[in-house]
Each structure stands twice: as structure tokens, then as C-alpha cells.
Image 1 (cartoon, helix red, strand yellow):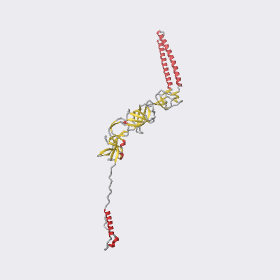
Image 2: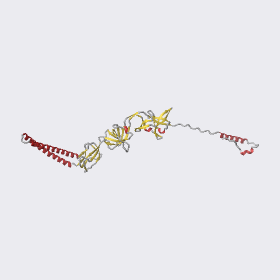
Image 3: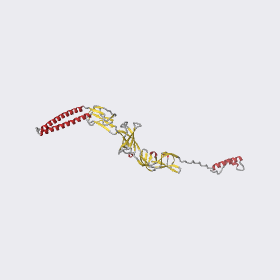
Image 4: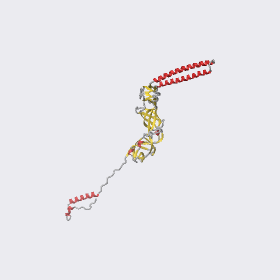
Length: 385
């Protein structure tokens, strides 16, 4: 700012011939000097603080080609390898039931009885028929022997001898038929007592004492306990990694600390239309006396060996502009900097993804701290896996 003129109106009367006092002239000069100095100097701009880029602490993992055998954890249900339906082989009335649902049974144990009275009478009749036909056969055989003796003396005709032989043959057939009838009656009487065909657990008791049953009616359903299996389900991403015959481990939810060994018995070829998961069945090879059908269990399936794969921890992925990317660390002079990469991935095992393209063996991928990174961010490597 520049001052061009200053007018002191209060002292205009002294302009002609009068002089100003020395003290007043000094004061005016000092004031004028201060005003002119303040107006002629421009203020110095404030100095700006230098900007320092932040350094982000990260952890990294070096990617390496490897042979990988992963494991797949699933949830399933224990079931009997075989379900046995004990059915009535004859009609009758239930006389006694010796087991209840949930009872353990041994092979050959008596389960229930039907009223045997009719079968006992039928057996008595068949035994009497056997006795009668045996007696008739013995008599026919004696007559035949006498006819043979007379025939040797040529006192009877050959026709009489042949008729005697025919009588013996008919009596023999009648006797054999009576024996078969007796055996059937004995079998039906035995079938009124129904035994367990296997060791297992009583799953369903379908009849009660006094109930009439027909041939083929279901009486008791058993869960065979010699072998147990686990029925589980595997996602479409994991199903291609397992094969029948592979190893498995089973941890029953109700038996803390117990682990059972098994193998993959069967892998389904069709997915469930509702869930998209594939059924898998495991055979348990350990002693399974403490397991029961219907128990829930966690199954850990051992996957097949996959050679020459590059696996990425799923936790290394972050979202950038609707893309799933990773950061790798490269050295730039004396500093480590983060570089953004968008890998091409395939399904892997658990929390590891199969890398198809985008990163290479030997790259240091950031596994912790990557959410704070941008392209070119300076990083400090804390530790490596």
C-alpha cells in the first residue's frame, strides 16, 4: 500500500509564516515512518510442512509350487450299515414280546412268540399220518416179500408179483409225503418263536401282545451293529477332490474326545436338487460299540493328491472396485512396496484357493494388513509364513 499525500487540516492556519513546534514535528515524522513501513512490507507466506507417506506393517507368505492333499470337513449322521426287517412267516396271534425299542439284541436272541396251539395240533396230526403210512409201507413190503418167495416156487403168476411191487411203491410215496408234511408242521411250530437274525438295536417294535398278524407283516425292525457308517454331504466345490476308498475320521458329537477311523465307501454322482450337495457314505473301521444309529458326527475326509499346485490363502483376498485382488510385496530401491494383482482362481481346499494365473511362485503375498494398502504403498514386513 502506498500513501500519496497526507493533509493535516488542524494546522492549516500556520501555513503562512509560522513554524511548527519541534516536538510536534518529531512526533509526526515518527508516526509517518511507522505507517509507511507497515504499508510497504508484504506479509511472508507460512511455510508448508513436508508430507510423509505412511508405512504399513504387513505379514507375507511366499507362494510355492507343491503337492497338496487337503481335507474336507462335513457334518453327517451315523446309521447302520444294514437295516433288518423281521417279518412274520406265518399268520397268528402275538403271544409274547420280549424286547422294546432301543434294546440291544444278540444274534439268535428270542424276540417274540406267536400263539403255537394250532401249529402244535397240526404237528400231532402229521406225526400220526407218518405212523400210519409207515405201517402201511411195512405191511406192503412184507406182502411183496411173500409174493417173491411164492414166485420162486412158481406158485403165483408174475402179474401178482408186479402188483405187490406197485403197492410197495405207492406206500413208499405216501410215507415220504407224510414225512414232508411232518417237517413242514415242525417248521411252522418253530416259526412261532421269532429270533434275531443279527446283532443290533431294536429300532421299531411294530406289534403288541394279542395283536393278529398276517404273513409278511413287519414285526420288528433292527439296526445291525456289526458295522456302522456315516451319511454325509459334500459341496460341489469339494466333491471332485475325494474318491471312494479314501481315508476319513469321524468325531461323534455326543462322545467328546472320541475319534473313529473310517474310509469313503461311496460318492454320489448326483447332487441334491434342493441343496446342491452330493451324498457321501463312510464306513467306520474302528470298534463302534459306543456309537448308535442316529448320532450326529463331524467327518473329516482326506482328499486326493493334487500335484504342482499354487495355493492362495483365502484371507489374502480383499475387495477393490468390486474386484477380488491381492497385494504382493516387491522391493523398490531400499523400500518394500505393495503391488496390486488380480489373480485367476479355481476352487481349492477349505480356505485355500487354487491359483491359475495372476501371481507366480516366489511372490510374497500379503496375508495381514492388506486392507490398508493401495498400489505403491510402502510396507514394513513383520514376519513371513
